[in-house]
Length: 278
Image (tube, rainbow, N blue to C red):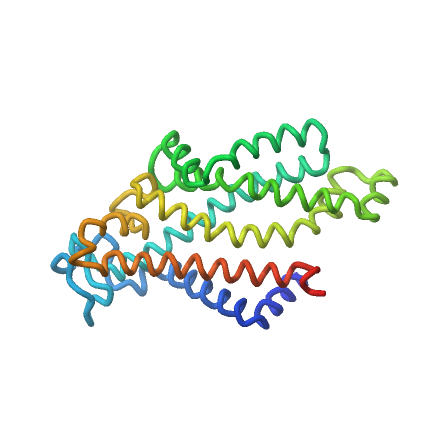
């Protein structure tokens, strides 16, 4: 807990880290209280289709007469939910596989990393589309597909950190006096994995949100009428010439969200990397 508070204080001292923390905090708050601050429901038809932004409809209306501002707010909830759960799936599986591969090495390491290399060889969006096509469309399959895509990145990150930690003197001493493997992994090696693992998780969130938006844009992710920034962008393609605001605001929020997570990830890496501290 003390280390966590110290990391938060160090992030707050960094101007870019402060921007990332505040921006993501506001985004999370907006997603949580979306029903309170959104003037209309995400599927509610409230006005004439394709109304330009005005005092009553800040972001205008879409081709069905739905309030774009309300759908953007509800879309933040969907994007964060998909990002957090998908990264959680990938991080959990990648952490376990990376820990096993890095500590035991040998044939176990070769088999695990061979599978990870096969998954890593495919472009992430193509692999996510393939998995989604197998599992089906919708919120759940999209989160699972994006989670599987993120497993190799986490496995490689954790494996590298474990291999480095294995060579430390106190780990060798613990092994020599007969400390059990489970205790060594939990007490001595895992703390050395936390820093790179946390940074990778933060950066993976932005990648997961972008992948979800791309899949929804292609019609393979979140399905209408659920409010997803990617599906909103897909629906606006036909009307971009006459109603550019239908595409502008989803794009803007996708870019801002990804930028905030990348800023926070870069700042977190600077704070947690001991080489950069010195």
